[in-house]
Image 1 (cartoon, rainbow over the protein chains, first blue to last red):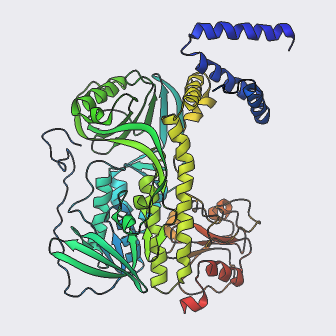
Image 2: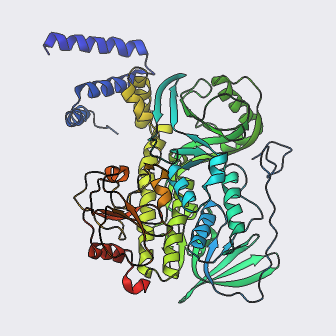
Length: 61
Length: 534
């Protein structure tokens, strides 16, 4: 994926999160992740990415 | 609860019998087995003992059957037990068999699942039948058995373990007396007094989600298909389940919101408003009558050991499971049958007492298996935390466009537990490439005239393929089967293979090439040996 292609995804996600509204954004992102995980078809890789994406978001309380 | 103006036993469709207190003997002889609790589990245990010629005294504190509406789903494996006891006919005649479930999200169908079924199966995967009918059909068989002495209005108030068994203190309207017994089966339900007398406690988890369970009578045209409604218009964010039962009775379970108290939810006008919302959602515009309702929340609780001295716990006294796996009653029936045939084998001197050591690992293992599945179902039905809820909603929403996500909503209903780790099960012979493994329930096979399951003996049965040419000890039924027939193909058997099948239709052992020595080894694991049978 080129930088430009990644940017298209980034923009589409921003638009979709705004479109579904603040009360459904979280469910939308979870749904998207589940669908992409299935399309990727590689369970271990998905679990690695889940771990990767958790980092930097540790609880502050 | 029932609608105002109707008594506790005032059902729209079922007449509760009344049982008088017993006439009892002047002197109580020691009973081989005392069964405490004449619900479905206790009656199955007593009937199983009677089938093997063992006498029992069956005690129940009530003067009628369990009231209200309780279990409604009976599984294939339970039908096999009823069939082994020779009493499946009235159940088959009255119950509604089903194979399909449908799940809906915001009014749109996202999943239709079929439970495993085929022409080789004598019974359907599931049948709906109200517990009152289950109890009344079992009672007919119990009352007809000369080996079962039932005492209604008889409450057990004391228990003393003695070297040769146990002595129960029993109270009935005519007084209090001591009832000595060699063994005791405690099938006295979720609030078991026997459990308290043994100073045992159920351990496990309680779940947050609460449901109202309501039975309504209505002329509603929909096949016997379990429906699950997620986030329906009538209960935003909640879940609704709908099951058809005989006599135009429908079971409706609806989830309560966090801000709905049990007290408010139980009020008749609130139940009616909620039920009417569900009926509108499913397009029922005819009338309905309210039969009964109650509030339910899911628990996974069990005993550490199902045995305490001479007392064995069976059914809800030993374990409480969530409703979503439909395993409460079915698990209890399997408990009652399991301890029934084992105690009978010991009392008939066909097996040593160590056979009884397999009861807890087998049946507690089955409950833990239910917990694992039911915990998944419960998390989907009533997500316990924000994270589970987000993922559940994401899966439901994705299921609108992807069938695969719909399968996350599959309730994973019961398959019989495999007793692979039981001390009574012989490790597998690696020579097989098909067929039920040791510990698993047999697979039924359609034969020219009937089914394999109908050909099994009442005790242990050896399925012998071709002619294994081995001497079989007395007390063992032998079913000779061709080495190239439909059973041999389904069981991966060749000339000389054999399966050893227990009275509960679980496989105890199997061999590609059976020998008398291997058979003796498998019987030894069940504490059944030549010396014991002699």
